[in-house]
Image 1: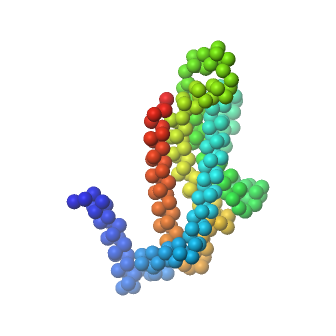
Image 2: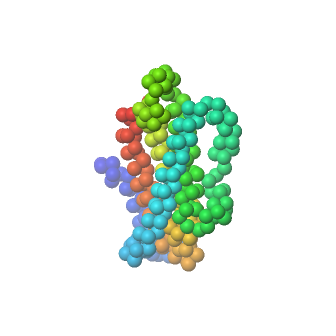
Image 3: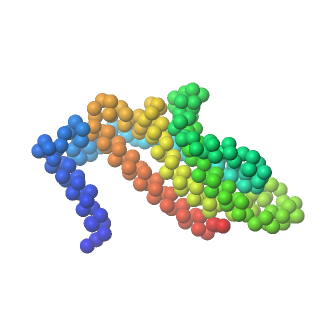
Length: 247
């Protein structure tokens, strides 16, 4: 039997049972909307543009935060990896900051930036910079010191050393950190929207719950699952980039 057919047995059975149970009144539809109603609510939200707008807002914040977090993480990782004394001096502070959940900074970010894209993407950047920084730092430490000595002998500029030696050496590890960060980005963005930020899929989810639109609430949850799967598939494709250049 085809593996895809086997994989579909459990979800199809659960959905069929759910639909049947709702139809006969065995399942309370005020709490668990029937699958057909969830599908219909999702289709209506997609048709009227509200789902597209909310998705764009969430992905916008997640993408901007991921870009900023990656840039910060790579920069700090390379700098601290090359400056061992600075890394040792700053290690306790960095470990303390890394232990703080990104969501804990939501009240502070809200106080500084107010509601909106900047506040949300800042928190995403904070969450995503750590795995990238740690991966970059570990890769930078493994660079052969003699390569840097040769670069100094040849009087290469800092930019030349960066592009010729450092970037190729750390690229593979950066991709590994980026794969982890991609997963964080979407989760943190939606969490911030659920907590305080009136935009995106997280806010739409809360509105659906508060207005007792359980069908739409489930539709949004399913859509978030689809986006998470897409993000996971995209991050898996990064392995193709990391293999040729991994150190």
